[in-house]
Length: 181
Image (cartoon, rainbow, N blue to C red; front, side):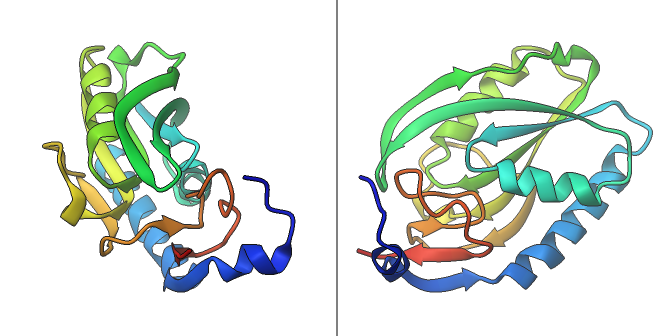
């Protein structure tokens, strides 16, 4: 699906669920939590691409402790539906056995993607492994997985913005919105 018409693009935004300012305030709180939890420890912040790249960027601007950054990319969605299969399409380059690893996730929906990533990383023997998620949608959870830090709990709506997409569009929105046909 290629979108070139600006009005068609904007018409799919049903309503804003989390404002730009609310996100900014929660990013500051989450970064302060990271500073407290990982001070004096070798920490690796792992972003699950593509959705969490904006979140990671904003978090790293607020974190004041030394940290490294790593990236993984997964694929599990077709349009607005989870395929049920999680594929790792880009893996970490770092040996994580000497790090406290903090996964920064954009959204925990069914939990399948995060569970797959956590299981893979646990097998690599990090010093510790925790999860910080921007959004949590517990109503849809099918995998046994929880975040250690949740910025926002949201209802069961398909959401876009702040890195989250619909067929690769809407990642550039500065807020979280409900997508509507």
